[in-house]
Image (cartoon, rainbow, N blue to C red):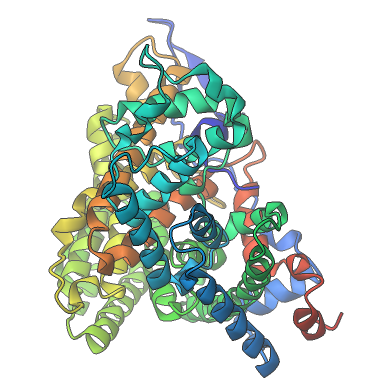
Length: 583
């Protein structure tokens, strides 16, 4: 299943990276850890259900896929949605712990986007009951309190970490008797994933619980993509309360709806990419529309956000392509010319560019201007200046890296990481996402890009460090790139690669705490929750994108794509779906 726990899922140093001894001081350091010298084996097309190559090739070649959602299916689907909505509004459940379990199950199954208002109402009732009564938390078991804490924090409710003090002994540590409460410890471990900076009690809770149940919870929910883990959760969900069967059936139908929408969107993206012609012009660059679309598919899980996913994928595509241009295609002078042209954002600037680069530059301007125009038509404002600025920052960062690695003079690690926040591309993607979701155009909202700068920074650092862990090796590339780990080892003589990796792990953990803090702060206003959720999903997706195995494959990413786009085994024994698939 998915890999999201950074402690268990970090890729090992690739076996084909040269490690050399420094004769002067005996330290061990990688020779350009992120040097792109091997091809990634992108095997997603080789192992899918039913007829592997035919379905993939149809979609990736831009052939339309028939929408098989008929009236009978949609009628049953709407009925299941209404059944769950009635459960959430049920007076019988009102303030009972069971209603929290219901909300948790809905979220874990990835269908919560249907019930945002109902979930908010359920959590509000529990919040008021717990915070307005004396000893409002005292009747909770460890499992129930941990579940309450996690759900509230996720939703933006202000719940202090010290509510867990009741489970500490006189010596100030978590009591040994808790070791027998496996279910409670598993939920405590989940709750601790929403730790903010300075919350020592949650750090202690994570350490204490992980020593006992850590191996059982390699994939904490808060750092997981719900669509990916939903299948396992359905298998594990026991019919205890009576509503589990309804939820399971809804989740399966919702998966089918989402899969159908995603396949159609991927067809559109594949055709758009093919029509651009950049794959033919830059043959060494990545040609991975499926991978680029996967970022958007994971980030924006609501099937109704089709337009946003399509436009976001286009911006992600150019992050990858421009990265490859800087790594593989240009001289320093050409890279500087391209960066200058992007800052001008003027079609006349194409005259100064090499022939092959003109096509990419024009496509970037055409696509971004079109995105800005669509946002204007939908929300009444055109963010083109902010989008242009984001692309200029990205090219500036790529140019700085090209100079560093071209000269062989690596910077200090902090300088590398500061520039790496921009070169990660996260800023470009999140700025586009911010405007595509219409965040600062909603009535009564005053959110600006400055309000999300810290969130962007945390996502960017998580991405940058994971990218470096994965050695940033992608298919059909032979350029050079650097890594934070190499810079760190250079400025810390005597450090081993293991020490450098542990240091980077700690940094990723710290950035997750900062990201939690920013999402918690922003979620005080529900109108931005779609953006914070999408941003969290981008951070959750990062390990899948960079967890290479020894054969330079991305097995977890491949499993995710097969699971969400092409696997129908999950739908077996559903009468309506069985008929639709001819079984």
